[in-house]
Amino acid sequence: MQHAKPLDWLGLLALTAMYGSAFMLTKLAVAELMPVTVTAGRIFIAAALLLSLALIRKESFGFLRTLWPLILALAVFGNCLPFYLISWGQQTIDSGIAGILMAVMPLATIVMAHFFVPGERLSTFQVLGFTSGFGGILILLGPAAVTEFGNETHTLLPMLSVLGGALCYALNTILAKQLPRESLLAISAAVITVSALIMLPAWWTAGGEVSIQLVSTEFLAVVLLGLFPTALATLIYFAVIARAGPSFLSQINYLIPVWALLMGIALMNEPFSLQAFLALVVILTGMAIAGRGRPLPGYRQQVTTPPER
Image (cartoon, rainbow, N blue to C red; front, top):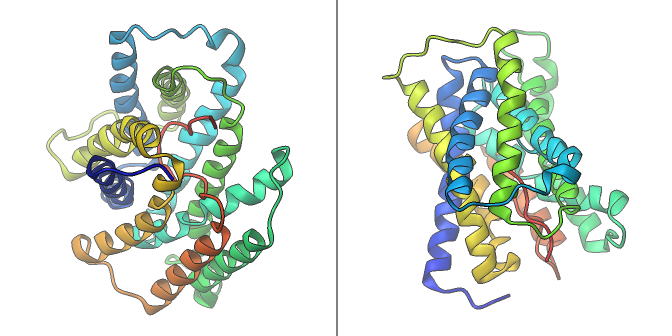
């Protein structure tokens, strides 16, 4: 691990706050807006910001001629699909629960890498860690999620939807390993712009809202989602990686679900559940076991994952 300076720790805390707060902001947004509108809105805002910055810096997009299939896949599995799945799930489940469910992303990534990335083999610790993490998910789902299935208040499908978002992020991490050493700002801008082009017809055909109150909690939540965990966090993430290295930043995997749970309890008046707390402890324990000897894949809720250097 490279030596981390105070500015690096500040970046780590800023990323934790932005990523961890995304679940609370999503919960606020879907209270009044359709999930497709929330997904499209945050992507449109992030695309406008990142593409403008890339053009100001005169970034080259020549890689699109050969990498467009990969960029398209990253747009779908890194943005469009997981953002929608998480938004849809959070119509029913609490933001803290969504944050805990998303904590399985690094564990899912190491399992996928075993099958799809040459040279990435599961170690004993990683198998034990994944098993522990899976046990935590079973604790969180619990028998109630199954017995409630079919009722108006069921939570099984929404929880599985958020888990689907986590699997999308894991697959996105595997796909991003194929990226060449291009400008990360240019790649991020390209991916988020393609995401916006995908979401525009999807939002329109789904009957997305066209009249949104500009002075409302849900509109502010979408704006904040687009500016911070979707756009600004990208730049801070890359800066911290460059300065302090991936091992240092991998600590964010443990901080984000805790932050999401605390924000839900403190600001959203979500109930404190011993079941959720126990599930969080078991999942984090699994992450700690799986991460012995190497950093876990970076947990991020935004554009794409930087290629391995």
